[in-house]
Amino acid sequence: MRPSAALLLLVPALLPAQAVGMDEGRLDPAWFGPAATFQPSKALGFQWVKPGLDLRKRTLQLRAWEAPAWILGHREMKDQVFLRRVEDALPKGLDHGVRRGLKGSLPVAAAGDLQLVARVVDAVGQADDYMAAGQVAITFDIKLVDGDTGELLAAFHDTIGAPGADFISGRFEQWGDQLGRLLAASAAPPPMAKPPRAVASPLPPPPPPFDLEGALRRIEGLKRDGLLSETEYQALRKKAAEKAGPPR
View 1: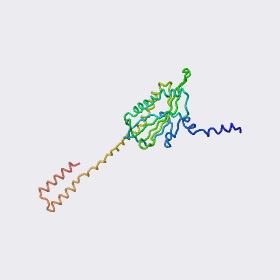
View 2: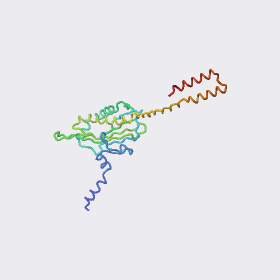
View 3: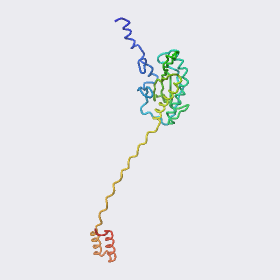
View 4: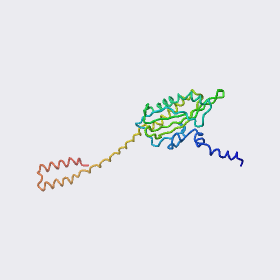
């Protein structure tokens, strides 16, 4: 085998792991930490959320964005110029979008025990020849961490494209709205369990029919034993007859 051919076979093994990883190497797992196991998401690109995440009674802080990472190496000047043009609008778009998606379910403040950290990892600007220019795009990482312990609670990576730089802020705000909706689901109280349906108590059995003959025998016995006067005897016989009702 020629030396040049052998070298070509070794090139993939010499490349950094991130270069052949997710999203064509733009997703760097080291920035998020070992806890994140990313899955594709239709709304948020790639995402991971800690199982059983509970954000009730927490406060969210949107931290200042980190410096651009340029995971794939520095881009051309047009890409850097594009990023400088839009980077001031990104924090505002994220803030507006997240607040809109949360709908007040999670407070957002200048200081909080939850911190949302973001950075740009890649950008693609338009060429000088606008007749041949394609879409612009920006790729970013966002993670939610516990402000006290630093524990990773959620992680996101996505790319947003647009026909021009002026559209990026609006589309990024829409992305933030989806993120806010996801976080709101973890900040809402669990649905109340429906109370069990009351089971109707069975109706008591009807009382047995009045035994007139037995009652008269007992009254006769009391009179025979001298326990009833004639007046009492007749009164008890009358009550027994009334209780038995008319003959059927």
